Amino acid sequence: MCGIVGAVAQRNVQGILLEGLKRLEYRGYDSAGMAIRAGDGRLQRCRALGKVAALEDKLVAAPLAGHSGIAHTRWATHGRPSEANAHPHQSGERLAVVHNGIIENHEALRDELETDGYSFASETDTEVVAHLLEREARRGDLLGAVQRVVARLDGAYALGVIHADEPDVVIGARKGSPLVVGVGIEEAFLASDPLALLRVTDRFIYLEEGDVVRLAAGGEITILDAAGTPVTREIQTFEHGDGAASKGEYRHFMLKEIHEQPAVIAAALEGRLGDRSVLVESFGPRAETLFAGVRQIHLVACGTSYHAGLVARYWLERYAGVPVQVEVASEYRYRQVVVPEGTLFVTLSQSGETADTLAALRFAKQRGYLGSLAICNVPGSSLVRESDLALMTQAGPEIGVASTKAFTTQLTALMLLTLALGRVRGQDPDEQANLVEALRGLPGLVRRVLTLDSAIEALATAFGEKHHALFLGRGAHFPIALEGALKLKEISYIHAEAYPAGELKHGPLALVDSEMPVISVAPNDELLDKLKSNLQEVRARGGELFVFADDEVGLAEEEGVHVLRLPHVHEALAPILYTLPLQLLSYHVAVLKGTDVDQPRNLAKSVTVE
Ligand code: AGP
View 1: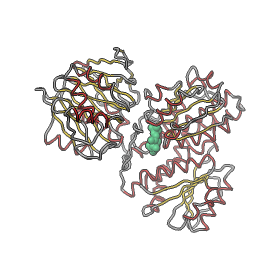
View 2: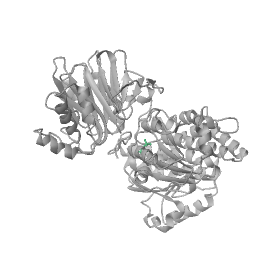
View 3: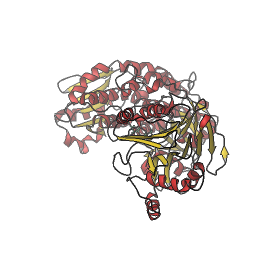
View 4: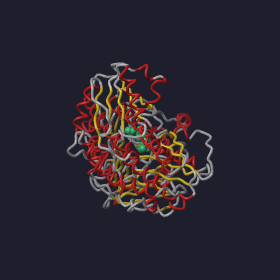
């Protein structure tokens, strides 16, 4: 998704902006650009279609220089990917703007501006903002112009603006799209994601909805809230260090993040487990009171996070006895939802900025829920700030577009939620103690599964020429099959479907032949015998089976049946463990096919538009 970087510094800002754009590449984009105000007041602009490297080549040939500037990576929404549609957009030679989000009333504004004599050089919604700002800036300073213009914008935006008449000034504004201010030493920065700025600072101000900020020479930062009142916002230190932004010894971020899972699952558990039970206080001081009133849960998320919610339904109903409804955020937000008394609204999101999930939370706030809990990986994100309670998943920054460690830490957090609710609702203490013990052993088991990497790489060769694949699971492993299929399709572009194994004979079995690999997870649980029968149905139709099975399961390797054995795990935690081989399988298939593993085509890391 689009990324913004801005800087006002004592040095030339080109390098800072370029480095920031490189660090935002993981979000997914199709073009990039930057604008810098030169010492003589001229605005210089450079834009390129494609990767940031293409922009860098142009900058090497014709460098920009100055102490204030803005830069952008664009993920097309209005208008195809092209240099003309790339940001920054200018109005004449005096004003440049970068924008994330969507201006919903751009057509009406465009008509108004055309009537007023403005002509348009792009197909974007953003260009209306440039012209509106240019018109308003003729009546006063740039800060006032931005305040007046944002009042006219419907939709979502994060903006960065520079003007030829305002030396060493960058203005930012946000509503519905994230924007942070980086606090430097006599320098100030702007970005849509703190990762962009970690080379220059680890101190950030997370702007609130409706904030407008003015960055000026000497590190001056002035923030006005939605009402135009000057406000002071807390400066927060980024805790994850800068290591996250590099691949280290790994070929791809995705592989690095897969291998980080033992450590981040341990981090997700840290400080949250007592001897025999979960520490409910780790959910925050209000948690115990809130949880005591919970009669049901509505869980809302997108993509991989939605799959984590589907797993949690099995856990919450079985171990905490709470009825759970799980829904995709983009559907939930447009439904006439009935909210029974005592319903807790739970959102799941790696980024905490997914537009649909955020909109669902805002919609839910008007619907009489008991309260809201965000399970999220990004402290300071909009979702965390707008929820009553938050449980951080502690995965650390995830750069690969395909979610891996974010998913397994979400599952870990959801198991903690299950235990917290179970405890408040009188779960058998021995059962809780057992699960707590099993959670303690989980990072070690995950580490053991990762040693299967080369065996899984060998299996992946069977997928190189395939165009379709079927994933099967039963019970809480059906969502794991869904997640396996999502991973395979998003990074290898192989069409993959997932089914509850018992559903096979109701239709999808017709697809099975020797060209359709079938992948199944087979932990040693109460549904194992049923699953084995379903796998026989596949074998009988000539389908090639790839089964990830418990060590203790008597599944024989034979022609057309590949079995990879995983260490035995408490059945409740098996969904977490069985996710790993599916992640590794997708990864190796994608590498084999030569796709862009970390930045798959058409996708973005953080989906901040509807
Ligand atoms: C999965 O690999 C994707 N990255 C995607 O499905 C993602 O989970 C979804 O867009 C939701 O993102 P969020 O967790 O940041 O809200």
